[in-house]
Structures are given as structure tokens and as C-alpha cells.
Image (tube, rainbow, N blue to C red):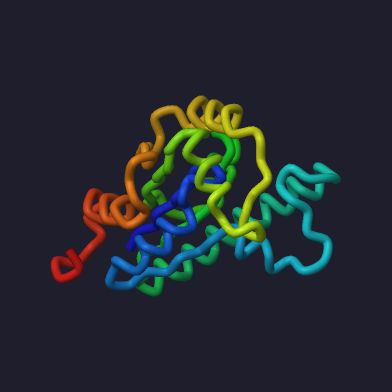
Length: 178
């Protein structure tokens, strides 16, 4: 079994696509970093929050938890879809350093800053992500990831089409689900 790590900027469609991708597969689990991090009830610090040392410690905890859950699910025979914002190459290396296997695919949803902003504006108010660093984040991801991962411009793709494309390209679907 393998792990699919799905990343991109806020508003890129990670949560929607990761859910749809997992539902297309015969045995799949979805792990969302945001949901995992929300398990911290008291003392949570946003990844870019203060104090910076605590934020960094919690990012590392998140990466360890993501990798541990992915390992448990894959060992139980599930394809694991991880939904996580990975801001740069250093963070990607930190996350991957927690994985005990190289059996993963890195998918970067890259619709561009304008599409991400538009998608975020279309969300319910409680679901919006106040963020103004899209261009900087895009540059940081592109510089830091280099040629790692499969970058998909999803600006003109529906979430369902994106999930279908990922499943087919990675050959994850069974013939009956195609």
C-alpha cells in the first residue's frame, strides 16, 4: 500500500480532493493535518503563531502524528491520503523524515493564487482562511520542492475531475471503480 501526500496553498482544494480521492479507492483512509491539529484543545499554536518555538514544536508533533497514522493505516492495507499544507522544502523534508517508507506520492494542487483567493472567498464565513501570503507561499513551495512531486494546475479542473485524474495516473483505482 502507499501514501498519497496532497498539498497546496489554502484554497487549492486539498480537503475536497483528498476526500473525493479516498472515496474512489477500494480501501482508503484520509488524514487531514488541520483536523489532527484541532485535537489540541488547550495550548494550540498556529504554525506561524507565537511563541515561535511552540509553533515549531507543534508542527513537528503534527508531522510525527501524520506519519504514524499513515504507517498504521498502510500496514493495515489502506491507501492513505494525507491532506497537509507544506510551506517549503525544509518542511517537506521534516515531514518525509518522519515516514519510514519511500512508498508515497507527493501531489501539489497548484491552481494559482487568484484561484485560491476566489475559492476561499466562496466558502462559508466560518470556513474561510484569512491569508494574504499566497504569492510568497507559491514561490516558497516551488523553490523548496524543486522537481519533487507532481504539480497539477487545478484552476480549470473540478475537484471530482482532479481526484479522478490523480487516482488514474497513480493507478490506485480498481477496474470496477473506473
